[in-house]
Length: 211
Image (cartoon, rainbow, N blue to C red; front, side):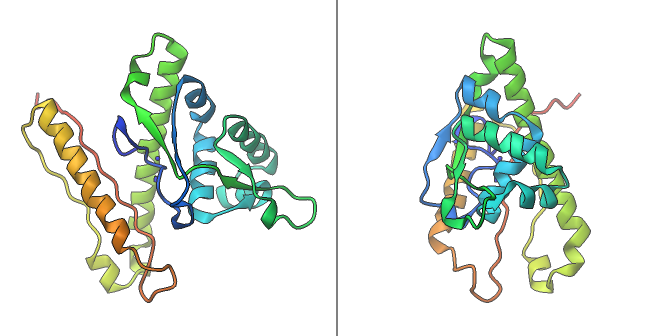
């Protein structure tokens, strides 16, 4: 939304997930495109296409537990806003194949302050769905961790810290974390390599009140 990693113009959480899409551009969300994306099923469809590659509405319906009519409708809406496009190279027969048009999206916090209440509402929905996505992914991991090797169980992390920072220092921390994660793209191994798996990285930097 992953893949939202912050609201400072950085890659959204559903952004950079599919290794096959690393050469695609990022899509900067504006008021119109945000309204087109801010729907739970649309965001799940887009994430699924980014991670799993091209698929049909029927295949996505089975994977997400939805009707093919619903997935077909929302795929067309995503296409109208430039998030997905046809994948004719995968087509066999009359069924339409879809693929992600971008590597990820960029969300800017100014959308949360837009004068249009519909835009602010769409921004809130978008961020809440990103948070829900993170929760689902963590729950899936906890529910299936015994299916993974001991090596992978030792190589995961669920940590949190409490720091006292200014907004400027918090923003510096966010940027440095993103730079560190980004540096590992150069170290990425082929998907077919022994023990290689896709790994999800979540970062949350949020202010809290102690009272």
